[in-house]
Image (spheres, rainbow, N blue to C red):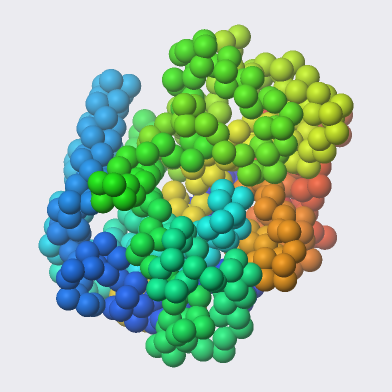
Length: 518
């Protein structure tokens, strides 16, 4: 029981104490200072300036008006369709459970009234450098993400017992190319090395609040390079429904993910496939598609990118929407995208990948000189298959369904350093991201590879040692089988001195580091 409680605390964000370790990890890779974000939101990085530049400078953009913009109408239509599908699916799968808005329903649906209301708007909650995604398009030097959180504007936040937050469980993420495709305001000559240098220099600034925002937007700051012309897409993440604990079920919360590419020809955001979000149901229902997916992924060249975490799955295998559930175990067979695709892990004889398929592919890769770092077993293959997807990644060490919930500068004490803005997965990945920035700045070829979402890469071992992001309390670790052997994909996942790897469930080869003995 204590392990289950600890798991929920770690994955649902109950452990929200923001240590000095966490604050240091994000230096040069993210901007989370609440007062600085408030000033940036009131300036050129407010959502109105990014999406509706004809409005008066700094004028707030209510969410109701935002979704009436010609560019955003397809977004609203697609979200509404997803809500209809969600309700229909649950009425078919759970005919005895009601779905609707308000506490009288078994599954309480996200209330869209504030989403389309003049009394709510999206506020800048964080800025994240993703130059580590340069492998997608080296010419664009990766990405920069402006993360906005939906909040009510007709109520004040309170504190203490019974505190009420004005923030609502939805984020809107504007993804920009770190460097645009064409000459914009003389920025064509800015190199990836210069962009990386600016981000790293910003991480060393001894500034906070308005002084920090001014410096970030100055002519030598990383945010001076942000232009609305560089917008590539919008990503949305909202808590579509939650089911409170009852006599028939434990609690469950579902999160909806959508992506909308910006089309310059129509000046609209249009629904697009989610990157690497495998459409499991469609693949399992179509023998030809299943065969093509198996052949494509098990090709040694693709398997190498799959192992490195840099693979880009072709669109014909992808879905345009995804649901992630938390806690994960309650919806494993329904929502994890790889479930049923691999035999031995819930799959059947109709699964896309048999154990023999995977073992043979690993052997062919080795024979062709491909060195695999992460995928060394069937379990490692399936974990990576989940891990590369949006929903699978967000079901791993997330704060509920979010990896970056963002800071709340509406709170009575917005500079409260005890509130964590992001998940353990986010903080555990910052060492790798900063390593890539340093390589770009210094003119060295960056290593874009990444480990599994559950456990930070070994290149960050020294900085993360003893923390929940590395091998400390709550870290993910390898459980040996009855013979005492560790799965080859996870055998380096050990615990710090004084901690032992303890199972969360009997079927998994991965546990968590806690005080005590095996």
